[in-house]
Image 1: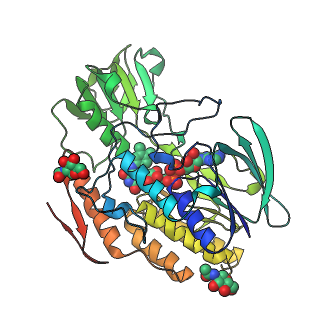
Image 2: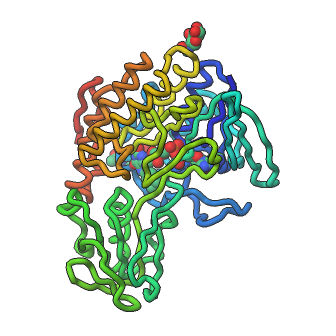
Image 3: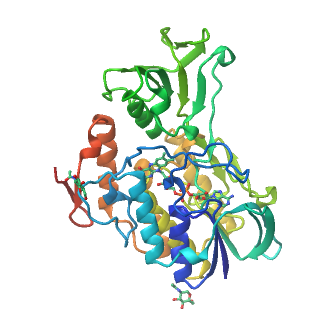
Length: 418
Ligand SMILES: Cc1cc2nc3c(=O)[nH]c(=O)nc-3n(C[C@H](O)[C@H](O)[C@H](O)COP(=O)(O)OP(=O)(O)OC[C@H]3O[C@@H](n4cnc5c(N)ncnc54)[C@H](O)[C@@H]3O)c2cc1C
Ligand SMILES: *[C@@H]1O[C@H](CO)[C@@H](O)[C@H](O)[C@H]1NC(C)=O
Ligand SMILES: *[C@@H]1O[C@H](CO)[C@@H](O)[C@H](O)[C@H]1NC(C)=O
């Protein structure tokens, strides 16, 4: 069984670790020169020195928004330390430790960008990759493909009415690297996802004024430093430096940072793979991960609002159980019906297409379902509980929640130790 894994971030590493343990013959393709994906910091934006795109949303000074107790792998937790919320560099060190522990490095082809994947009539896959330094193209055939390319590569950039008259800089958080260039400036941050909240906080330390524009009910009562004001959505640009909001108020800005999220993007999947993305709803996926028409392809790490590394690990075990024949998937028709039913349920609950793969309140059921089907270890409830607590703390106490320290007691319970 030859398995190709696209990406050596946390999802690709977990996939490789398990696929290797089943005895599959694995190649990992990683376009960067190191492993760790999201957790690598680079000053680069746009294109790299070889002329290929830089996929990095990481910025200086980032600390995690989940405690380390939630962020480890099931049987490889993040080592004990005197804080719970780690820095970007500490998570990157942890992923390197993981790669060394499971001897993953030799299976990774670095500086290798997968440019095309096509299905072959024999149920296998033809993969083409480019070695960035030489631009040399190579084609190879695999029995299975695990797509682990991350989903913070392709920014959503909304159009602001009148933006052509705005004289300041408008950028997406994907190219935000540090608050320093905004010293003394008036900055507008748009969008209340985790990046919008955290970038607002980072900017408040150096900018003269930060306005945080969003429509999120969760973030409305969050306390910010005194130089931060909240506003509803933007209505339009009214002059070269002034923006009007939908409540009729106006403010002047030197710069706008759009923290407006990302699109799932698989530019290397040839059309004949039959994968579509409609407003961030990816089809045709069984259980948010298996290509139900061509089930030797899977996607690891699609769901969001999850216990990230734990879920990657579980999804990888699920897919390996299937590839190995230990778990038999239902027929294509049954998988399609199952998926339709699940999506009907989600739409009826008020999920939008953008939330098609959102877990949050559904995550425990999702994990138990995967683990049950694959007869593999479930994710202990304590991780979901601690994640929920920590997300609540983020909104309740944005300024201090990263000082909280937690300790896991057993598979059900944790305590806050400070
Ligand atoms: C700013 C930021 C902060 C975050 N903070 C947290 C946090 O606090 N806690 C948390 O749990 N999660 C956080 N996340 C989510 C984070 O994305 C996940 O934790 C996790 O790192 C995702 O891993 P991944 O392997 O799915 O994707 P990535 O880490 O993005 O890895 C994908 C890899 O695939 C490679 N790749 C892509 N396309 C190709 C191609 N065509 N050919 C070859 N290689 C390719 C990329 O170079 C990359 O190395 C954060 C994300 C961002 C952007
Ligand atoms: C894979 O399948 C083989 C043959 O059925 C079985 O013996 C083996 O235990 C399976 N491997 C794992 C890791 O489950
Ligand atoms: C945590 O440990 C580091 C060194 O390991 C030390 O520099 C730091 O002061 C400690 N912090 C606390 C809160 O004890």
